[in-house]
Length: 384
Image (cartoon, rainbow, N blue to C red; front, side, top):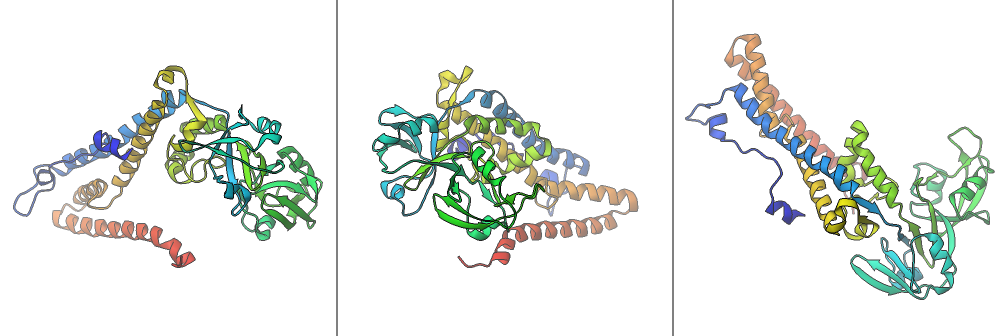
């Protein structure tokens, strides 16, 4: 993608003649302050226009031409387990078991006796692996609440709960049913793919009086199957696309979700970030409608528009910061100067006050950015 951006520099930046705009030691600026504000504003607006067009195409016709494909994915591999030793890795996609196509967990459970012949997709490579052990059904924990009973017991996101006090919990319904029979203060033994946990239940926040472990689920597809340390789960590709399409209609919250996509992804789907439709993600979707003749090229188009939109959005926002030498800083300075000059009727006084405020703002922004970078290390230490 970086090479594509170099070949086609569609990010919108304005490179005006600085001498004409700002002048020099021996030459006065040709442009007035008002004209300079208009010229510099055009550069920032251009970033937002390009971002709006690219993202409108991405969320509109392009995402509309991508359809979900039913797949079973390896979502977790226990360290030092038989699965890890056999070569299993997270994000592998299960294709075949003994020659039979696997599209969901029901298909996998039907082939329980034939697990010596598994075909999986690792990146772009198809590999043959095998496992030997009984399949166990359960529910995958998406997150663990801070300060909860589960957190204190040592549970972590990604574990699969298969039983509570010896009672099987093969799916979300059975898990919820058992938890509705518990009470605050009750100690339960939770069986998972990573061993057993003794948990003292706390009060349920909903006020029902039932016990509360302190774990959460994606709410889309918590059901899973595991054996020999490998956990398999259906990837909810359809729900993922629906969540992606919903962002433009979610207002300010949607904009923040969009800006955080490369870093945090969509909760319950891709918490490690969404870099676009690349790698294993391309195996979970297929082109449809007008994009069918394009094949896999639709993902290149989607990624191109996604990154062009985000880069221009970030560039425009950063350039808006009221700190010289950014365009926003020059605009801020000129607007201040024009305001002070109109109030005090003195160019010299307006210049002094403008310079003082612009300098203070620049230091404030610089200090804030520095604090954002350093604060996590101050809170948690600089050690590895």
